[in-house]
Length: 236
Image 1 (cartoon, rainbow, N blue to C red):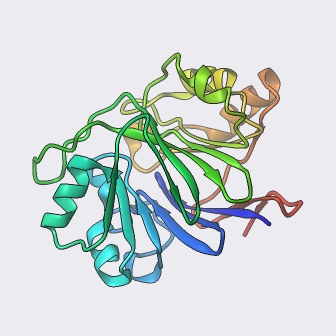
Image 2: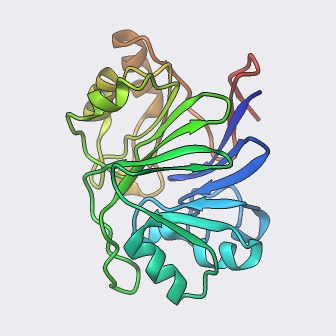
């Protein structure tokens, strides 16, 4: 069995596992880096890491159209209900829940979470997913470097998705330190090049990670995918 990830640009992902489709922070409209549109994606579940507009994105429209269950913190789930989203599941940092696609735990993240209309978005989070296939996937979300990444790494991370854009999140040097703390088998850089303020050179960062750690870096283009478990890496 395999786990597939599609990077749509910025911090938006599609996950395919256990026969289910999961979207993470589906920011497509007004996203200059997006490889698709909100109308062209399907979802059984949607994960929302925090309340900022470039992460909540098109969650409401997609959830209404597909009937997907949205998983986020309590404050965001309450807000989504007020926007007409029918199915939500609230969690909080440190808490996990068994879903049909695997066990999902919310992790600490250093960031903000104010919702697009100014409402309280609760605490920002990352996601630690243990898939039905047994893979450990760490989606850091928007965050700065923090020492407890070492504890997350003790889980045995197969794939880490880390922001490298700087300004709003970790930049390349701190993201390299994060890899050293997490010690993942594979890592994918995200949350960069969407706007000028977060322009980075992911290839140069990948070379540093390769030289200083055992992690295998996969620099994807928007729309490109990565698969665990089928004997192949990045693919179109």
